[in-house]
Length: 424
Image (cartoon, rainbow, N blue to C red; front, side, top):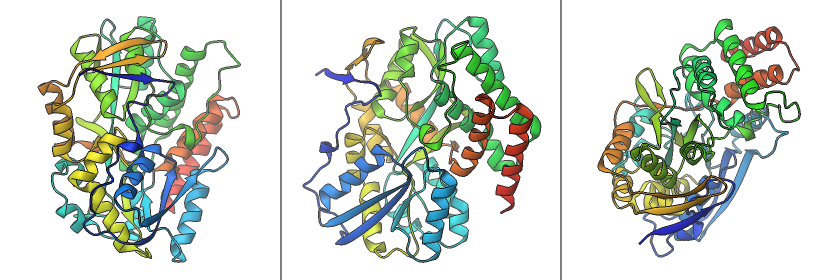
């Protein structure tokens, strides 16, 4: 039976927390209270937690957001969190999205989750391997977000670098998508991997990145001084999709990078690609497909309810828990069996997408299924963003793009901050 969904403003694709089951038992349910910390507010994370609450109503949840507004920086939020952890007054669970994991492991702040992960069946092999630190798992994602390069089938666009992308877009006289989202995606795919690997960024590379962003801003806003404003606070840089695929398909825009954060959006993208209405490829780094591990869940070593925290993770990684996450949040699960079942049993769906038009997405093909499985089970690259580094780089860009600093001053100030960060 065909299903019809309405999509308003953002891509809310058949998502409802009411999809969580309430008639299942939790193998190791623990009573009491659980405190959960997330750096950035995430409705997907809240919906996943709601799935556990449906089967464990006796557990009281206290959710805290580190960066709740534009006035709070990542640096300030993590300083407060670290102070609490050192005093033994930290949360039971931390969602490590956009939080640098290694320092928390090395300082003994996180519990070893290797046993829990090994007991969870059918987790995507590549995802599990990418979570390991010295052979052990300290944080495990509940879902993944993909990153794609999307363009009209009748255009020639070069995604190999931001500079080449800008040049090819100008040659094609094409329109591109949201500036802030584009900037964040280019940072995650072009700047961050090398920055984390080398623990430094050269003056030339940073300067070029800022100049390319300036050029792209010119391409989007032109002489519209009222709209021309970069806003790169952390709250604006979340890995959330922006309706790019249908706008490319219906030729509203020519090309864009994009987050693919739900199964429904992935189905739409694959269907449009299968019809040759657009071309897409997943972002790559050093010949590896890239993905973002989402809702990376960890237990604090000084948790006051570590057994309850472990029970929550065990359930959300179980086949039933992953089914509920896929159903209620729409996110792409990390359980291979659940993911394959959802994709192979997909049905035709009709979407009404604001002004872009309506579209009937066909079911996933076998080729689509295998492509996603190869990405998550083979040697892929896990984009584990360090929110503090991203803040340093992107706020430097913001100062330059908005005319608060010259290119030289913005580059010099950012390089100094990066050097201090890695030296601490």
